[in-house]
Image (cartoon, rainbow, N blue to C red):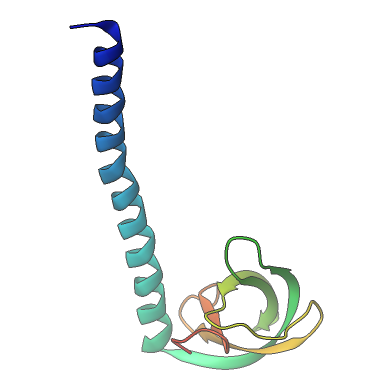
Length: 111
């Protein structure tokens, strides 16, 4: 077997071993987000938050500052739709009363 063929086989094996790793990471992150949403929906309250950062590179995300029981939180949420929102704008936040650091905004389909 030539060195060129060995390198091609090795490259294919590396790619085939990376695919399950990436799939596992995606599954873990997706399951984690769904568990967070379930936790929020078990016991929740609404409050208003302020957009402190907006990111549209490789997805749409906003960082929101909101206050629960006198404590300030800054958390991130994705937006499933294209909306006209800017830093400093107010948004509705649905947060878990058990774990206030878990939240989703009005722009999330699960809201």
